[in-house]
Image (tube, rainbow, N blue to C red):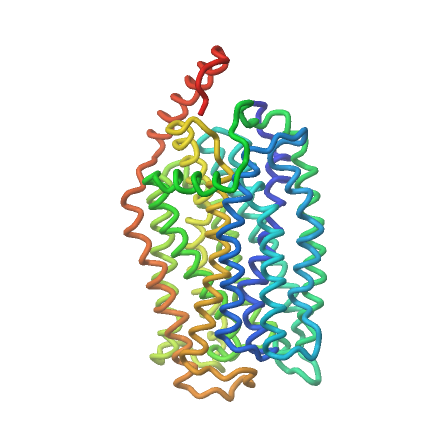
Length: 483
């Protein structure tokens, strides 16, 4: 395989910008828009987003399995990437543009249908795109670099969404002093960023198109696709001890982070007392922390094994997330009118996100290593199945995270469409406990599960050596068993 050039890494990484936009909008804006701006109950909003996640639980491994076995002149991944661009842009715009006059049932149906369609279109793109990253290089360290490029563009795109939303769409008006309460802002967000996702996907697919001849192809005698096959492949993947440990921990971390983000606009508006621009600066500071940490964690991965780095990041994120709202509830935080109020808030959010950048950077690389081990054990390349699981874990952040947020809002009897400054202090504090200690404990719960993850640099070198010998043997003996 030819050396992976800088331009290919850039074009490939750029494609993750679409996922960054969708995730940022779905985790930070969508729940608040439907529950607080449009008045859909928190439980119904959470149920709608959970239904979409359940749909993903089926389509993600399905997309991975189909992509793994596709035989096309454009390879296994690119046909899906090209096909997804237009449907994704349109459905994303529509989920933020419900017709006026819909009642609660109508809003619930609209949110459910177009969230499912948006997630389905994203699956069609994102799972093959993730799998493509594992195929671009076999090198243990370069895989982390590829993931770092992907992570950078995902975070950069999300940061742009928060910045533009805060500065342009959430500006105060005569009618809405807090711009995040303005219902007219959200359809504009959907149209602008839906178009941005469409362009990003097409540019990334075209930029990596030249690598198609060098990517691995499915075996000539590969099993034809059936609906039973994805279920069997998922079962086989779960038989891998390292994958079970990694996936369980990652899902808990992503759901915790997703819950934090889903409650973030509520927290910014009601707990921290921020205006529309400041509300968007909070996740922007978080993304800046991950963005700045990405090259640092990628560099440190040359000297630190991936597993301890993964666990260290989750520990730091959990500790700081736990601490932040408690400082304000206990009266140890600078007062709202203090010049230190916003800098202190932004600094702690930045540091928590900086720590959370470690698992974000190494997750894709760890999964590529697991896919290598699986190939050695099973004799088949199935990046699509494994990265379908990674895609599902990421979507669990917004799906389950938003569902949890919906139940929290209902459990604490948080008033719908409430004006900032009018919610009772005990209710606001209950929101803080959920977004702080509640989220932190959920993230930390997965750390112990990583004890059974067994892959490290030495073990991966052994796997690569065995795979090279296996492939050379297969190439010299066409009749050798490959599955």
